[in-house]
Length: 463
Image 1: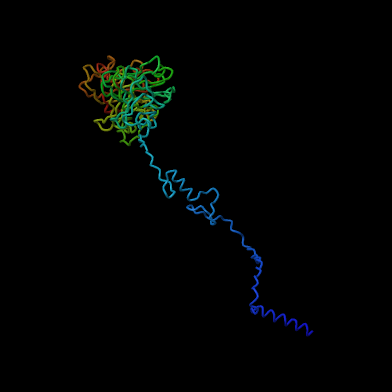
Image 2: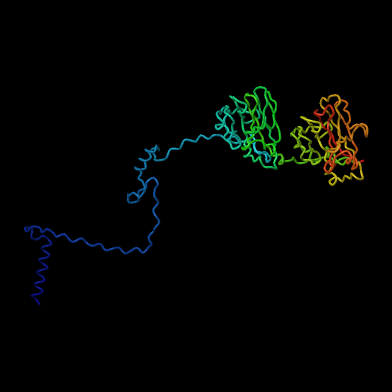
């Protein structure tokens, strides 16, 4: 046991001496490097991983590790592309040059009863003044086209907007065709009012007719300078216009034509003005112009060829196709001026048939007096003013001598006031049958059968 303890002590002493460098003469031993320690893994983090992608800086598409994201250009690449595309040094696209916006001319709204008009054609009204060329260069529309090869030019319009001028016309048919199929003008039941205003450079006739064989002329208007042409188009009018149904606006000479206004209006869609409040008719007066609110609501200055301006009231209508104008009556309210009369019967009918139920007229048991007051323009000697039946004997109810010649009252001077008494028996004698016994006609006749006249007052009074 003592030997073992002594041996252990000796080993310890030798170890102490070695550690203290006690044997300095011996070369120092090169230490053997210790093996690298294996790191102890850290305990796993039990917190769920955040799967939200890190936001990418739009100016630096590289991720946090300095690597470029797949499909995303680096700043250098983006700048290179920007230089090639003409962008600025910051990689931002330069602003595009502003587009040149062509101003759109705002045309007036088209009334419900107007099928088409030059003033409301958006394409044409947006052409610049000075535009010129063949028809396809100027008349690019489904509604009209050129005829022949004149020069079509867009010019200033004294009525507002732009107008169409035709120059270099080498034949009378070098013109403008309205395409009636586009307006549906061929419908049997429809009738239309065509109005044309313009200027003809030298004396001639403005004509409207078919644009194809048999080249029918429907109506003409003499012109030497400014002109206005108005007339009615019906299905019957178009029967002779040829297979393509074109209406041609032309002149029978080769002068320049300028068209300021063209309008096609449905006559059966005339929108009546609202009636106005009027004073009640005096006692004993069944009906009068002054007490007819529908007629008095028509604006003064309204005009028509035929009786369109009279349509608001059922109690008067045109006979034939004279021009009608609503004018101020010297008696107050509205009167009617009648012009462009081709014959004595181009005038006004008083329609009292509708008054029988509406106003309680009793033609069998009562008699009535129809009174008309007005004036005639420049009447020739021998002019008469007539109150007459329609159809049958065309009897004059206001003849100076009962049973005498069938002539109306002679006109003295320019103003007149004439009247006639009637009932069922008188109408049976003086008028025709059926509807003819529900109306009476006022006319200026005799030598003044085509004279212009104005009606100030009409009234029907019970006797």
